[in-house]
Length: 392
Ligand code: FEO
Image (cartoon, rainbow, N blue to C red; front, side, top):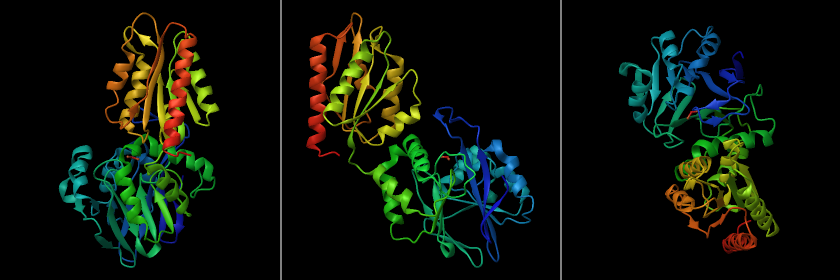
């Protein structure tokens, strides 16, 4: 797409990546993504806010073809989807300085081989004047790297937030038009990379509370001309209290574990708990991550392979451990052939989760009456725990 004007002196640039289906060779992108950059032309200086993924360098350079001069390039975040094209931009504008946090300085030199003399570091709260416009830099570490910042354009009340508030969504819309669609994409993005950093993100949200923000311009997905929509959503996602939701990621080889999952799901639903179940052999892990944002309980369903859990269940446990959701309870259910250490091994895979382990239900072969009774007890225990915490 071509450069698009937001205001006379401010433009959207960047690339919409309609076809990308995987990020970090891990994260599914069912709706593609975008790498947004922005151009702000002050009365004296011009700044480019972020760049694009290295695969889209030509798109950005074509948009910049008519821009004679860039004085500053802001690097909010070193990850290559925003900084990968930076060396090309610095080569096109040899007088331009790259603005970043002091933490980012070394990272930009390491990851992109930017030379030290091209870099200017800015402190938290520091400002740079473009003449009639003022850039204020707000350090925002751990969204989701340690070096990250955002920029507030004071006169226009625009927050350039980089990954913060972003959504992996390829669209021709400059602004949010379909809140439901963007909510899902933004929640997926939060779940996949920001959920482990709920505490620092809560602080950043608090810091933005008193600030007048007319527009949030993130580096992925459409801009928010009604910022309250995404800021309210984030406040909900980072809150410590989960919802009355149980998630059951499971895998079944010959159907026994699946029978147990179906029985437990039904028992929980009868008690008023919302259940999301995911067949790990076929699921989009992004959807699993989204449900982990709200879930109070995680029940991993796994058959026993040799003596331990199924590798797909190990993957799910590893993922949950890495994402550090706010869940309060965990259990394990599943079937084994002749012996099993599945429960002990799963429990050892989730040291980051601050959870109470509820009694597991492991059965030999096809579940019998006593196993279904144990699943009823587990459902009752989960429902009672949720009730104690007054979850809704
Ligand atoms: Fe969109 Fe952390 O990069």
